[in-house]
Image (cartoon, rainbow over all chains, first blue to last red; front, side):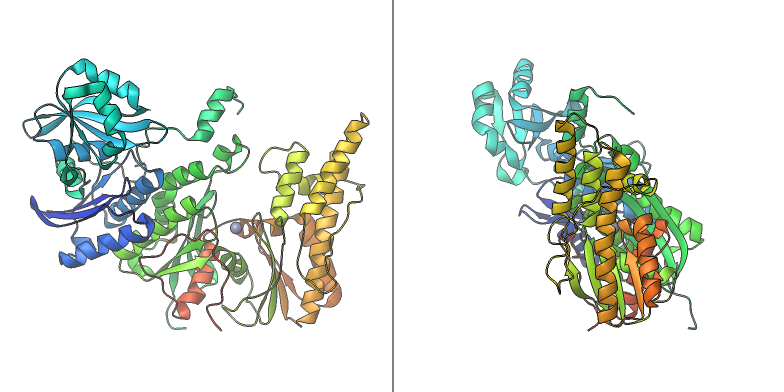
Length: 233
Length: 340
Ligand SMILES: [Zn+2]
């Protein structure tokens, strides 16, 4: 069983190939790369290095967001096109949950964070139970301060994971004091192999044609329309 | 030709998700267009982020439908062609990344096509192109006169210095309070009018094949303000007719002049505004008088579609043009020749 994993949900790029529960190859870059230019090249390169032809891929896992709108779309478009034309199952995995895998050995809550500008974040809270990750607080787009208030109520140690945590470290410590732990840099890398790992325990694959990113946020234009309360049409 | 060559075309540069299969560059086997007009209407125009989101929802469906309708499988194809630019960057990226994944999975060559080259080659689907030819490209983003001496050779002899013709149409439609997309409705109002307001024509310098439509748009706005300040109401039909006449006059006169100067064998029109009835009629009459053959594709091939991308892509494929998996969306891509 050969798995291809793709994560382009944020500025890092990660592609992995897993064969029979063993990682063959994983390429992750934290550089600000242009996903549109690099992502398919990285897939091709990984396949070539792993000596795998496209038709040998048995299943595809992709980070479905939330994250950068364009980034998520590129990964999802590539993954769904490959899955459809190769006629292989497709699995979408939360980009926040995939990040939380990095903190799986932490004894407490794991909070994955992706910056969403203007003091907002995309965040999801998980807890390890055996080899599983249990969702404690649903993936969402929210004000950081609000999230931290909610987290304080749990009154237990929390590990913050993600490259963007450092942007908000002082605010996090202000709100949570001793409870807050910040992951070291090596645990902030989104890994496509984590997406594969989570996909392997998923109940069932996505319906490929209708599969879309989890933006966790409506567009500004839609929000304005709602604000105006105009409902013509 | 001993073998039929099937090319897949993909187009997502604006608000249509489209896929098509074209045989030997000239025959449409299937052409699927999923339009977002219904969803974008409520925003009064194309919202780029929404366009991108809808493209992701539609992209594999339209490619599948194009294959199904053609009763072909990927291994029957010769190449995958896709709009590389110009267009909305986020929208372009969906088609491009789907094309890359499809090409990679099926081990097919990938070719990035210029959107306007596509519009020009829509004509190849209705009539063989004969060179030299003059192409008038008129759309929401373009107003250009291009001379082609052979396949894949484009010489730009004139372009708009401000608004594109289609842009001017949409802006005037907004002045008249018409819902999006307003361009075709201005055409309808003008056709139904027996009278027209006299608006200026921008001829620019004597030898120039360039265009300018922003002054005309301002004239229409000023005219409306003047009438309304006096407590009057403008006649939409008369304004539309006057505006249309000004646009069509300039486009027609410059096109005919260029056709004669470059001694072309045919004139072709391309792009969304080439669907305009007033323009089609005017060009047909003027060029007939000069004895120059004039071709314009049916409306379904004037508006954005993927058959035109596959038609242009076929000629590129024949010329040995190839892209690689590092292809990126190019929102401001210039029209460049692939044959010199
Ligand atoms: Zn177009």
